[in-house]
Length: 159
Image (tube, rainbow, N blue to C red; front, side, top):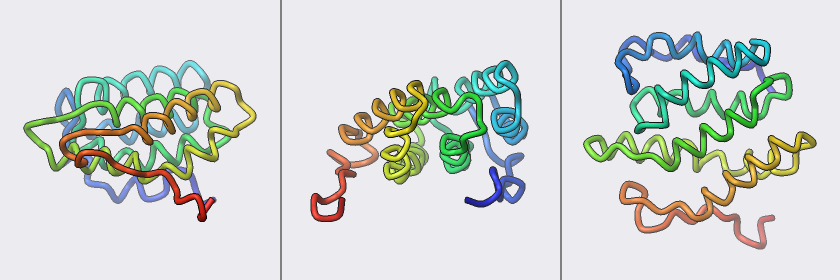
């Protein structure tokens, strides 16, 4: 695996928005989740939850999801279970005025299903439980922006 959060500096965060305005502070919070101690990481993750997924999804959410997947699969991240829970929250929230943003945010989470499968077998019980819940949410995901049902389960012959 490459460097954690690789490519984050190429995103034009200052042009994106989250629940409370400019997304310029999102990279700093992602970095605190990545390298902070348990308290710092949890605090930064709480901010990201409020900004990116607990109220609705935004264009900054779409850009942040790949980095959240990166954090979820990195063993040294202290709040991995919380990151996985945030991914599930993003999948469960909408933004009807911006249906294309909602679709892109959901698709970014859905596209990580194979990583969720791996995390569901992690040694850390909290990570494993959060990942199981996320896999269930992915497999049962239904929303207007994604179509009637998004079938993300692998074909039996491909497992």
